Image (tube, rainbow, N blue to C red):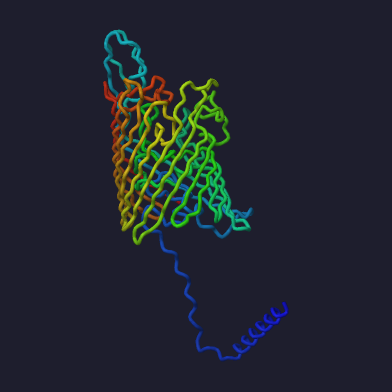
Length: 506
């Protein structure tokens, strides 16, 4: 200790002598030039994706992804210098969209169907552009849907993201995320502009990774790498917002795994190591929030085994660069137990198959180009892989999507093609499999920082569309689906949607 003190005293003494010697030297003839101020940060590139780590990258929707929110690898936008009185930082972000859709859809047509003399009542197998008809008609008669639909419509959508975080004394980051969305909350007295929470979760993170808890996408959904596309263009993007989907089958069958289901869950996301990271999540059931009654029933509750339970997802992802080429690849999976109890409490006689869904994705970026695709398969049915249980004996579902984009300056061009297949039943007289194909072309142009113009063309052919009926449930009781009708004997629904609009992201 004494040697240390003596050494310290000597250093201090030398410093004082040096200062005195400097003070006796003549002043320089001129003051040195002041140190130049640091250069301003570079402006955001004129593309539809902001640089990783910036607030714009976290709150502005990336190309090919719908919705907004801090789902980047870091998950936190730039920290402002002034915290709140609690020491936590509060930020605000989000977007506003206005879009126009021009729709040509077989389900929008009014048409007549002749009923042969002596026909019995038939409510299961005839669908008049979205309305199941009762054909109890004496003799030969004409039955009509009577309602055609307008081809053009406008719509608005918006999200507000409130992000709260802090840093503990040990360096751990913690906080919460609130994503408010203007969803399709339409009632007889409503305006269609109601606001609810899309994501709503807390988190802690450190060098060991991140733990999220609350209403949030599954780990598989968060980390899945999918086909590239321009803003609001894709197999499960804006086009279905302009179509009638409640009766004539699900709107799309080529979505991302789990389709972003926000049931309340626990999620772990690992740090990245040599380009690889992983994630896992668990949800007891498909419900969210504090409502004990499920949204569609007054007799089924969220803990009574009437729906999917014990939902587990896992993901493995790689992201890296090789020279000028960026590479992203993922393999994700999702599992859930099928419902085993009816709304009356009686055990289900024939249980559906447990849900399994797998998906692989690949994305390559270089010189302004991005190309990639996804392939998804498993035992599930409906619009979302891992979204609904498949009846016993039915074959699994599958789909693939490929896409590409090219960005030059503020302009991005893109194209996508996909095909999906789902079983319509296992009975001897079951109809053929449902097959949906999609072709999309899109363009996006960054007009100003945070303002993007977009337009896309979407063509969908849906063959052997299942008739979901007024309850929205697939008619699987007889071992097969009944089919929707879009003409006298037409079970194919052709849809063409042209979408154009503007997004303001902040």
